[in-house]
Length: 487
Ligand code: AMP
Image 1 (cartoon, rainbow, N blue to C red):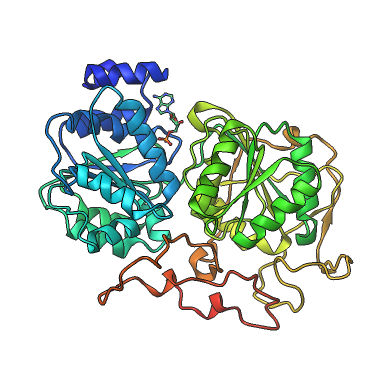
Image 2 (image 1 turned 180 degrees about the horizontal axis):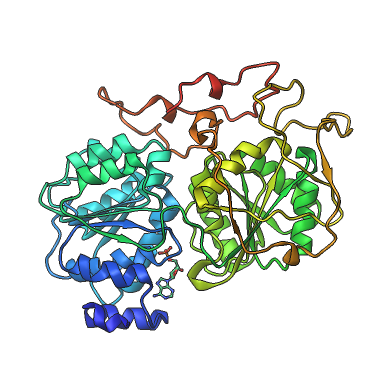
């Protein structure tokens, strides 16, 4: 199938062809004709599938006729993070270069004044993160009654980040007669319920089964002692032919520490996390995209949806707390049909988290051994609390305090590429529900300092600022995340 057969206009086709894309991806093939018909779409697709162009291209044509009034955008795209919003804006710039559409990007970390000026000129396409959009709305700088097309992108991530109350409020401000395009990488029941409320008689478009991992990603998982993870990471990076890589950490404070350690060992490493200023985030990202930084140590929030086409590797320095995050993380590699590699470092305590991931993706992640290092087994999840050092604790005197119960396996001396086999179907054991033990993780929020107070703020408890200090040994102390009620 060609782009020409999808019903797009010549200016858009011209821009697509100049970008060098000859054939539409499956999501584009399925979604574009439906969007052009004016129908609502419920799209189940991850980033990396060409999802952005699947709504940007037809929207350019839909919005080609008509003019926007001051402060009354004609379309609205909601994105969970600033980076994703900026990427969508880049897509409009690129594919809309032969159309005269006004665009405004409302994200945190950037001055209100410039954004207000853009709104004042009248915008055809408004791309926003929910918090910043509501800030402008409350200041009376934007009216949403003229929005004809609404896109809610990465809905499952919006849910994870606690943005759904804001999204619901925004949707309540829109005219009921509109076209809505709703995308999510996964479709848990909460998201499905939301889609049912927001969409009217939608056509469903699914390009990969929910939460599946791309076939062209070679995955591996090594179980090593917590205190050996940095060494294991360095060995993996050296052993692999790493062109560029993201290394994911669960906590933002570990991001800087790990980056420092990698730099000390001679690696060209940068860091990206939600506490950095927006200009610093953009600068780091740009350097990474340009190849000036080879290894980007990042937290989930900062790295969500990054579109770096040619990324060779993803390393999970920590097993993500939520299994969906595993799918998102490794989806940063193997994009647009290229082969990617993903390696996860797990500590012996991470068995339940890995279980939940394998249950979600429907296959076992092949176990690998880090060259020259001991490989351990997961500890049995017998529910007993161990005393002693917790996750991420520093090895005080440098001594290696491994539990005597930890089994070491005989070493597999084969190169990693040979150790990694095709994922095998796993026997499905019911995992402990992942949300039950979701520890502190970084939640990105737009800065609220500039926000006027709201008497009716319905944001849930979990959106409050968190202390992301590492939980200490479970025997000594009950960390806050365990005391908090499960969602
Ligand atoms: P997305 O899922 O929107 O984040 O897109 C993933 C990557 O695929 C981006 O780098 C796009 O530029 C690229 N892409 C989008 N459409 C196509 C296409 N039809 N052919 C090849 N690459 C594409």
